[in-house]
Image (cartoon, rainbow, N blue to C red; front, side, top):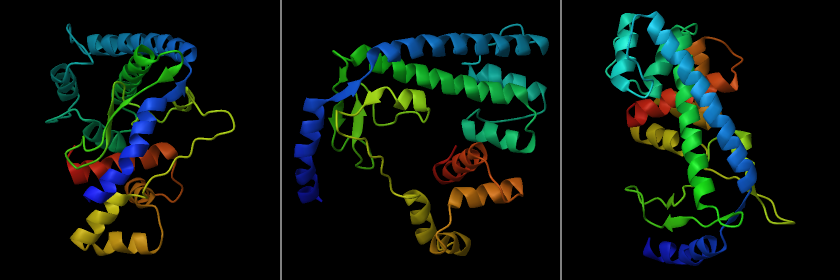
Length: 232
């Protein structure tokens, strides 16, 4: 293991030293746009809470969210995304929960944009990489974090490949799910992987009871799958 880690070190040093090209101007414009969208959504959530006779409400306060959900008959220990999405699976018409999840997504995106634009120097970002930063031994990235870029194309598009070069995105295919299948011996999961099927799509088909699954439905199933593994 040490030998592998030592061999990776020169590449990590080069990444830190060279940094990555970043469109700061577009990043700042997008940040302003996201803040406006978030503020508008926050107003909608507060007005909704007021219509349910809640005088004091903040969508950032889990206690307030739980109280409002209890008034609608949902008794939750936590207000995690996985728990809220479970409600949406059964009650897709719940506007409040849909808006709340979107609000949280916007706040996360704003956090990333603020960090990226704050740390950008002359349209480049020089992240700090910790080779064994995670408890699992994974590499972590900070100041700022560019390792967990949100999915939205406008955010990803802020990072620019050098002239004549392209970004390549690579990932292990459902590696955690494969490990769970192997360790648990679950026959259904093992069958899915042996057939080369998408485990998250299969979960979504079972949940929604239909063959054709949208990207959003697959993402909900993925959240539930990993929430089951890690707790959520």
